[in-house]
Image 1 (spheres, rainbow, N blue to C red):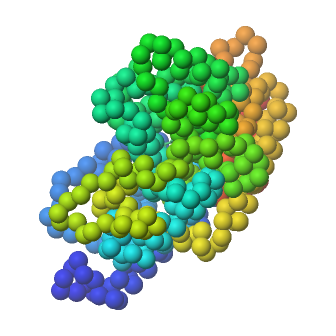
Image 2: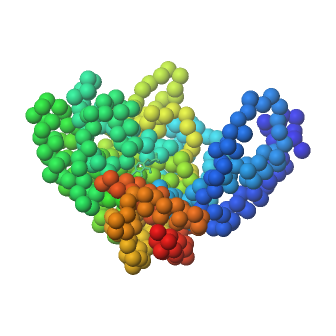
Image 3: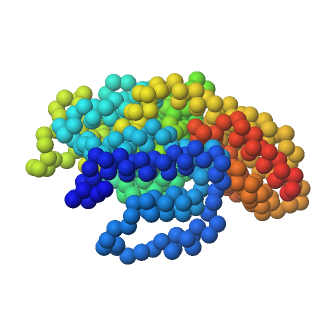
Amino acid sequence: MVSGFPLEPSGDEMHRLVDEAMRRIVAHVVSLPHQPAANVEGADEFARTLIEPLPETGTPYELLLDSLFNEMVPRSFNAAGPGYLAYIPGGGIFHSAIADLIADSVNRYVGVFAAAPALAQLEANVVRWLCEIVGFGAGSGGVLTSGGSLANFIAIVTARKERLPADFLRGTLYCSDQVHHSFQKAASLAGFPYENVREIPSDETFRMQTNALCEAVARDREEGWIPFLVAGSAGTTNTGAVDDLAEIGRIAKSESLWFHVDGAYGGFFALTSRGHAALRGMEQADSVVLDPHKTLFLPYGTGGLVVRDAQALRRAHSHTADYLPPMQDDEALVDFCEISPELSRDFRGLRVWLPVKLFGIGVFRQLLDEKLDLTIWATGELRKIEGIEIVAEPQLSIVAFRLVRPGADLNSLNRSFLEKVNAKKRVMLTPTTVNGSFVLRICVVSFRTHRERMEMALEDIRDAASQS
Ligand SMILES: Cc1ncc(COP(=O)(O)O)c(C=O)c1O
């Protein structure tokens, strides 16, 4: 029953609303392993039928839920399912969804410390944990963002303000030719013309050629540019390559460059001993992007940026206004609006805090280790298939490969090979282009992907290869 004020449901009504939604959510989540890995045929046309004008009156709740769960949700990539080995998966742990319900229901304000000190502190603890994972010590800090793209943007703006004059257009940035495009996009949004971003060639393992980095910096200085930032990748999206972060850190130090690390995909592997070894040098960075919605398995919408010197974030973002409450003087207490572009925003710390407190980080560490093992296993199995060439050995949990048949047009052969794999709908793989070649990738990140699903993936790849 709806009370006199429809936007203020009674206690019973709140239970009913949640129960109705929960019934459908549970049915959906438990069926994820049996849903097709992708189901988007005709989805564009269907989406067009949904275009509608602003409704003046309401529609019954059950009808809306049914249309969401029966019509809209199924027509998509099953990005939460175990067969999603495409792009960079995450999965979306359910406990974070509960945290979101709580955060949105209590709707406290965490942008300024004074408005909800304990909750702001809880989120600050989450940021501190991220600093700990990266290897940052006292004085470090950071913010949770909507994702890695925004985190890259905040890092570049902060570095720009720290290292360049107000007229910054002679500033140059360095990254490898394998960097995620959000880095160039962030540089552009931060005001840099595209030509100020130097894409340094990568080597045969897709890592930045650090001698080419040194040469580019020296050349630019001679020509009057102001080199100010170098970005290393802690796991590229294309092939999972990890740059030599220790060496890039050393160069950054000797050249007085801001050392940024994009660990949106790979940074959390530092929790494992193999990942920690691969990511050596990340702790030297000035700023690191980490995406909990990737390798901490959270639902989409949670990224993070940690910075060695938290005061750099404050210097870049702090603004005052007469209508705001006083900000904290004590450096131990954080006003997030002072160190990020956002003022009002969701209480996103809870979606990280709740699962990490519930399970402890050990569970995440074990799952990440499992992903490393699965990728090594899959690579070994791929190698056994006649005609398969491993294009990029796994450095973390991505392997890139292609089918080679003598005399064939390899790009079109591999396009149809990929279609055959995906046609079974037990797994979804996505391609990329490396050195001009169309290649397939397997990216094992979802907390729902275990050995059984990887065996299905290999079965489907074997079948597709035998038919190609
Ligand atoms: C290495 C890397 N950096 C940055 C991003 C951008 O992150 P987001 O999609 O969270 O904005 C991605 C996304 O896949 C990524 O893989």
